Image (cartoon, rainbow, N blue to C red; front, side, top):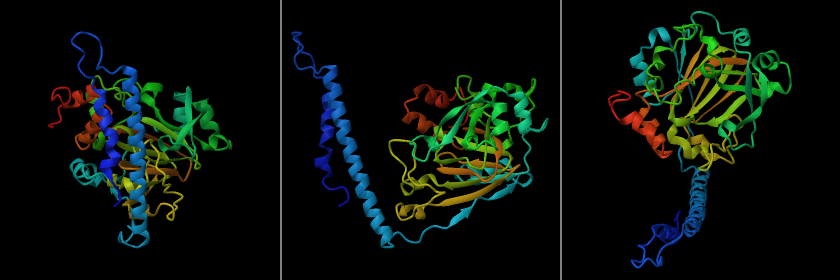
Length: 361
């Protein structure tokens, strides 16, 4: 009843058979073949029909689910859960992997020191990394990842001096700025003891693959005022994510990867239509049935965000912090599936040939 006469509406798939050209006439006349331009037109027509079909299916599906929500037929809305807080001194690597990383659950870890040699203060970055940086700002109408778009460029020292006082720059965000690529001076001389990766994240396959493009991307730097945030998104590549907060406070909201349909994610962009910080439960009633976690991150805390989990974050105070994305044994299968979907054959081979990266799969 939701999908109607699927057999009739799926007739567009028959056009795809026409993409295989018929054998050429043995006499070489060329009859019975389909030109490249004809194939393109047929395929374009099939895509348009398929897009319309999917749009109709999704509209019918959500119409049905919204009615069930109004009728109370979906059960009770789920309560908001607190992200657990664990002290590093009592959280072993094995427990972290088995309790949080593998099941895909967030956790805030306290008591970690990732910069043992020297405090990575804003003044530290101001003096060590005074280069031009690209800044972002949030546009609520944008279809981009996290609804972030380019805002402009400034020298890092200029931004650090003004991001808390200048009305325009208070809305600008230094977001995921790669330190190895743009400011290797932050790590000091070899053996680069300025930054220590906590044991929970040290199984990073990116650092074990000589041809992995992400190898020198992290850690990265975040700097922003209490007027900045990232809207709901999923980190690319089905990577895990960690952020160590050096100053300020952040509020995080997480959802299970199983709840995408309840969060109204766009199938054609990175955008989620539902805004967890400005919830409209009349327009988006299914969001109340999604499993949600909420956590407040204080200065000195390290937060772990599992692969494929939708999440949003806003800064409650002016902040700066350092982060990294990574793949290890607990999420490598998810990462490989994402690379297959994106047809990145070389990377799939890199992670599955049993030689380049030994992970026991």
